[in-house]
Image 1 (cartoon, rainbow, N blue to C red):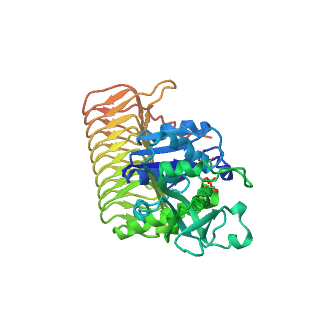
Image 2 (image 1 turned 135 degrees about the vertical axis):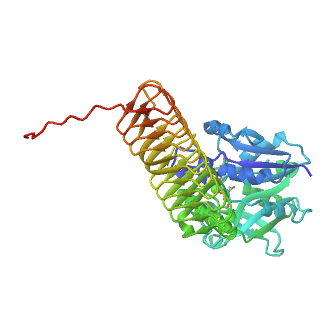
Length: 451
Ligand code: UD1
Ligand code: CA
């Protein structure tokens, strides 16, 4: 069976009240459309066809890793019209699965079940029972034959009795190209929104003597559509709860999982502890026995085993080695590579730096564009002065250097192996190894001074 997937993403998303295209709003750190693409790709389809509008053309760049055939729906004339932009390019005898980009939590296993359900039926609709069905198309089942849908009535067209129906259209439809072309050609826009509703194909099929079968899913969480920010928040919460349960059952210790947010592709090793108010974002990998203390953000980073990230620390786009201690109140900015047993203490900011093993910078320090050797002790208040107002320059500090407190290193500079820098020095020149450098004005003493 050649399966083609059509994902509808061209709607205006007015109810989001946002300049960002609706399908680019994120759930769990990823655009809604990406969630649907990931589920679609797992079905190994022949093609994935995404319908967008010309105002959101630029979103294409965000999905280069997916093999997508893009379509432009020139005017947003409704879901039937959107599907129709794709159909002329598909083979008549092939199968089509229609998905909505605003239903991001859709699950591949459910889609597989739906595709394989009642294979002899030419049009199938995935339905769901919702306690609060407001806004959804309602499923009207054929009285005589319960397993057949007579029609779908949109919220805007429904009367009060119909509005009480709790079985809703998820928007997900399975059929073949020929049947869809045939049915959609008869859809009219004679309704309150003057749109061509895809949902009208159900009554059209019935009139033609074709049965439409519903598969009623109980998995209402994965079938929520997002039209506004309330639904976006609800969907985010469902996503987060699923991730929390997943990691708890994998053995991660969380003091209060409700306060931990997983926004991306997160991998967590064994015996990891996470305290409260933590955000893990982007591509994050936590090794075995890592401890993430409270009020911490880790983004696009690897934290290797036995490392502790202490409270109020932010780590971004960096690799932290084994058995390090980072924080509290530390900021590791992008492109840092810390080797094992490095100590970064409170109010220390590190940017684009390599710090080799056993080196410590424990208090009030800025290390930027630097390469720091092994066993270096960086005293309190040390600053690598990497910026001359125009260019950034590099600071190289070799192994076993001791930098006294409140020293500044004016880059570009190389501090040779074993050098000791006296506290309060401003270092401007390279020196030999194992030297003592003192670069500060001498103390004067005026005896019996009167103020
Ligand atoms: C739609 C269904 C409704 C269903 C609900 C499920 C129709 C007419 N209604 O309503 O029965 O219960 O989804 O969530 O199908 N889109 C386009 N082009 C358009 C219009 C929409 O591509 O011209 C896309 C949107 O980007 C969106 C999807 O189609 O991804 C659904 O459109 P939306 O306006 O959100 O429809 P709903 O009112 O949610
Ligand atoms: Ca919708």
